[in-house]
Amino acid sequence: MDVPVRPAGEVEASADDGATWQRAKVKSKSDGSYKVSVSNPDSGYVSLRVKAQDTSGSTFEQTLIKAYAVR
Image 1 (cartoon, rainbow, N blue to C red):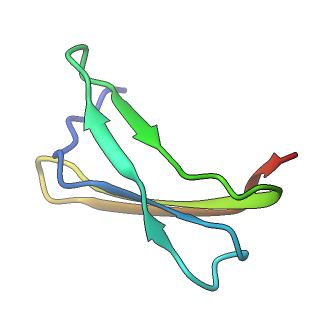
Image 2 (image 1 turned 135 degrees about the vertical axis):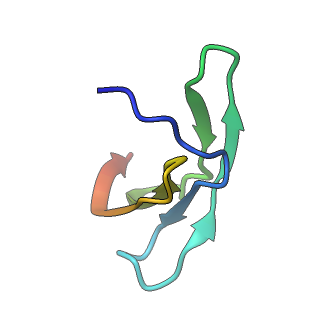
């Protein structure tokens, strides 16, 4: 199911298991998808938090602690 999402969504990244968060760069693409750029630490894990809202006003928030490893 495709849900239209407002560009006001945001992505944040954390290198300390969610103790602090830094906003990631989000760029909309011409095909309707988004590209997210995250600054990785030298090593360890990156956690991600996504917040979005569709055109009807419904909101979504998802947090993934240790979403991926950096080696």
